[in-house]
Image (tube, rainbow, N blue to C red; front, side, top):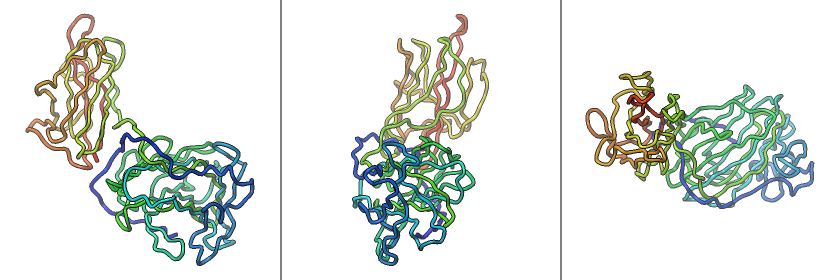
Length: 375
């Protein structure tokens, strides 16, 4: 119930892309309840601090909206009718003290929504007077934004998102207890990363769904799941449009492996290149834009001191498939002044510079850029 907002600086974190097989630990789709049934006191769902207030039936299974099956959970402010009864909580079948997990749910925010709505996850939870400690608090605002409150030192990825009204949208938290970190996503857009627990314990304990004011209007939640593992996904963010190369396509950057600094397992990829063309990756500490540098047919998308991966075996041929990849060493990143190591929380920018031809004349070209924040 404490809606504390603490801003604390941290050095860390970025996009999670840890390949792991998902295994469900907690599932709830609300289809086992009769429509109109208040779920508090049923199947582990409770109000906040039941020793103080007892379970007060309030939030209900509803057929008004549903992402799957017939029902979802309708949440609404109490209108002052009862104390804390608009909180609906559930312990998540833990304790979970190590490993990686994905907590996801689908949310439906009507276009006439007013008030605040919260999805909260606690790392410490005793629903009989505490102690309690908050790890995550995602807020849907009456102003139309959604994002995590800064409880644990948020690190910007794409920032708060606009609420998508009148349709079901997935809210997701990818939680790495071993690294003590979380990445928040809405509609498959990563918003922020953060520490999981600066206070309390590095665990996943309970979920708290909370209409933030007595007058918060109805909103809906469905298909809540906590799964072991974090699904593989793309690493980094592509930016800076590339010019077409001689194939008519534009070269595309990518990455596989992990953006975890300690893992030292990141492979850069470049695809849709001219076949049988030589190229090498370049990197810088900032983005930039230089059109047709030195007469190139492409655009340079890097800024700052640009380093070139031109060591033994690093200048490669794209072959008949038109692709190049390179496993980089996080402790040997090239710069104009020598090699440096990538730091946790650092963002670097990558691109491939390659040979091309323009109506039979030799030129160079570039892929688009790839921005990666390391964790």
